[in-house]
Image 1: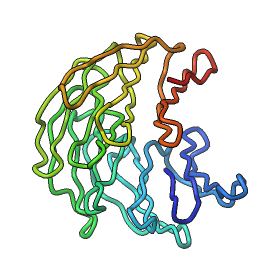
Image 2: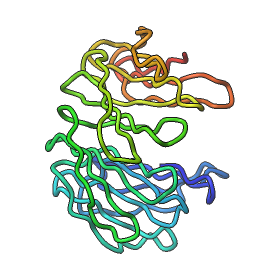
Image 3: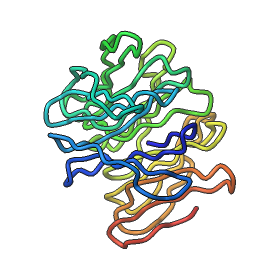
Length: 232
């Protein structure tokens, strides 16, 4: 999770049972948050004042304040929460619940779950479209991407992609969504205006992480089997 206001990056260390806090101005680890659990997904509130940590072994979201890195609460969630996204206006937290096949919606003012949206099997990665009105949810075992209207919290479309998709990213205006397919060593490109997959691009072995470089208008893909980064 990246905090552009405070120039911090938060990194979950699953095996180390901690979250590292990196100062982007020095590229140095400035703090370590020790955990009793193996943290998975991370997300920050819009202001950067709260850090949300997915605990998929205990079906909950842990809440920390970023001022002193103290734990301030927890939110009961669906089964095995993983990827998380904060809505564009900062009012809601969307949580992909891998083993209950839904997306939980948390009101960040009350820290209460206000909705559960059924999607495909084993949702994991998620990304907001350019205007924040659409949330794209990657369903790992359904080989698909569900599209959620964030104004109504309902699924409005589903796209079939490659085998065992994992994560997704969006270009600046949301007209293209890029999805890593770990079982096919490829990236699916969704044209959101046309409402279809328009390309499948070969990349390195077992692509997982993916990000859009706005400055250079390109996509960066991490392929862990090849220890490589591909640039599209």
